[in-house]
Length: 428
Image 1 (cartoon, rainbow, N blue to C red):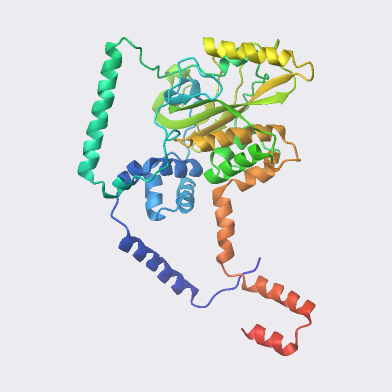
Image 2: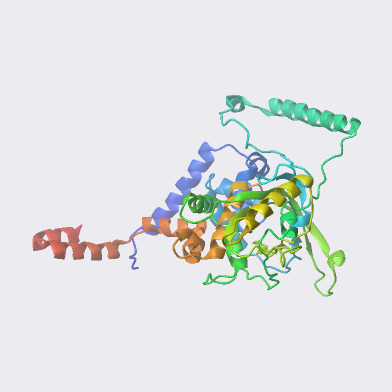
């Protein structure tokens, strides 16, 4: 693709950037990064996830600099991330030990540890709250005090009634199905994950690269392709076996001494959302060899932390009854045996819809059926990257004078344009 220099372009670009900064300082309030982070936590989560860098303050700064554009903020944060050293790689993060703040299952009503609704808009009416338009610091403080008192009172009442509190660490909902052999067995893969941020994307891609690329993909693109797979452009209609949201610990080993988990240095915790979606597939049910088997999946976060999913068998009466019904249905089919397979999603923060869509696409890419675009690795993985997409489309605004003149000449030749018209157009 050819480009030509534009006379006076350097000065025009400088003035354009000054005009952009003038618009920012003239029309925006002097918000600090703390205020942006506190007011738009889910937007900050989105920017961090797509940039593959857990840095809430820097994500808020990028949003401020980008005047609220998520695409530009992700670009800024990824560019900054590329300048950072990586002195350590964390130990595998065990999401089974997540400190759960919210945990639901669409597959079972009664699950080990119970359903924990947590903070969610799922059951709210999508109506504009016009009172927020005039909400000031005083009203905010009053609401905060009122809600804090409400939850403190609820905790005291629960304690007085002798009700047990919700456990922070909960067993996995699908482990009982694994123990029953209803989930197709998967061979453990302890291969070192490939860092998708350090090597070019190539096909066929290992699962670690697929999961990383989906986790750092543009939120709306991942959700759109997941929706397309469910609608019919892929044979995937899931049931959310478990969605859990909370914080997981990150630790690193001593750089000079090898040791176990108890010898690792705790760095802190990060908020994540994890989803295991269940799909019905034809194939070996694994009722005998799969009993007691778990599944494992791994994904490397942008900062180099490897996230491991490890099975721990749990049980509950409600899950047992439902599982028994499923087993009868499979064995009584008389045709090809059926098995349940799992799609996996893990993202930064509270991007629940993205995590569900990621689990759908993970399942689709495991199948790899060329008849469906959502099962084509190249189609999915190349086109969910927001920085690649916005960068290429945005470059179409830049000068393409030479290439367009070539197209114009070709069109005129086919039309038999008059020489005078051609010379006049060339002068323009």
